[in-house]
Image (cartoon, rainbow, N blue to C red; front, side):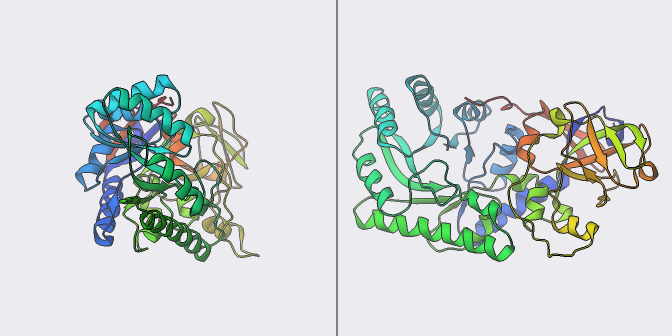
Length: 388
């Protein structure tokens, strides 16, 4: 079946671009002398995780315990779970999973660490643990430096945990206003992590892993001496968010939503069948890299995050003057621009390059792999809905 014959909306991925993205990041990590542990919440698909491992990834990261359970069942045995695992019910699941695979967890509080240690020790287990360090995103984690040392001094005493590293998600990079600021923010996060690791080591705590994770920051932090691991996620597909930050090019968009034009009611708008339930409701939070007084189309090239994604023809041409509008319905997508009746007719199919690929993928049960415009494979997104 050819791509244009697919029913819509459909999540499709160009297999050649996907492979190139996976291989490029793996090659970069090898050359930089760091381990690659991809964040798989981006795709939630064991088949794609296996491609990443085959390319050289040391293991994978998942956001949630349930994602880890899916990946382990699919044969993946080296898994870092970065979301805090809190409560006896989840910890019991963690211990069962850790009997079947090499598991790492994250902690940022003594209370949580003690509970996990107590239950793990009761089962005769010792679970590899990383301290969660907040390098600016203001989410989970303890601050670098002395606060991290104080927590580490307590965690290292716990018999059911093996404190072996520190990790951060330097997500504050998404707030960068230009490439120079992106480089500065990512570098500062990496240095904070390296200095924290050195502080812990100076106090007799054996820190072997210094792990940072984001697609925009990956190729920056990997070059800071002392970083041992990078954990990008969105690089496999890329999206308009990554493009706006300057970390991917037009040729690097692997995943798109195939959609059908169902109405062209006016010159300035067309309606497609990919609404918020198919394309995703995400919005972007970082500043544009757009100089003032830039013509509209050129401004959109520099800041593609107006609306919820870019519109691309089946031939691969991005329609820069068409906005996939944020004023969207659950079942209706709005394409806004002055040339809609010129460009579209009812029944045409176009592709949406999402603003945030992770949020879009979560809406689908399967991803359809395309090569040379032909359907080659359909992969189940087995970890879809796994949020516990």
